[in-house]
Picture (cartoon, helix red, strand yellow):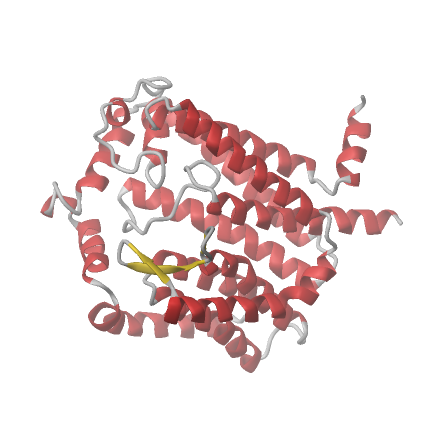
Length: 368
């Protein structure tokens, strides 16, 4: 089968070939790293592979839907998400000190994951209805759309997810042409709000995480333990790494959460600087491809949404690697498509399914 025939088949399935290939390679890397990080537990890797298969099925299904359908669904999806967040606020299921779930009996549903897509969709829907560049009142309306779910999720408490959801909406405003004057004003407002956040809204464990960022050695066996062990693992990998399944920090179980939030440290120790650079290039390719799709979108709604999904993915990567490397506080953000998990895979690949919808439907429309 020729390359042109392969591309034609992918097009019929609304699959963006370069993006799909990069995602598949990243997922395979994640499965191999998980096998090493979690004590060579093949059953866990097989379970993760099943979750990945399900998530890729969701991605393929969402890629078939025309972007205009997403536009029509944006407001109902956002309102439904707010309704579920209110249910969590008053009747939510609590575990490990956080109230983030709705107990359905046979499973537990986390509405904040739904809002990772609903918020940028809603902001993109609103901004696409108004002239560009946006007026100040339209930008304020966009911020209000972001604010309601962000505050509800921060109360659960889930500060990491609330920040990611707020950023996903702000990226839409950025792509819509929000003026630098407004950006500067918002930045100054946030800076002024930080003392209030610190003294009245942040929990003690969140404050400890921030303080540990500046001095991990102040509590080396407590709050700073994860960061210290992670930096040791990254540094011990050197240029070429110790080899797959040969990392001492992970294999001897010095590194906590090595199969979830801190899996990057496992990869860095085993594959070294060369492997890390390769992983960075793969992430950059995915992000670059997403931005290319956004720039070629057929309308403002598709452009705003595709750009937001792509930059939110970048924030996931940046925050996880930053916290594992000791330059950001530990906020519980997994390494995208590498860390162990099910819900995060579904959410991320659902976003990429929308990206593929924007890419392939636009090209098919141009051919007609």
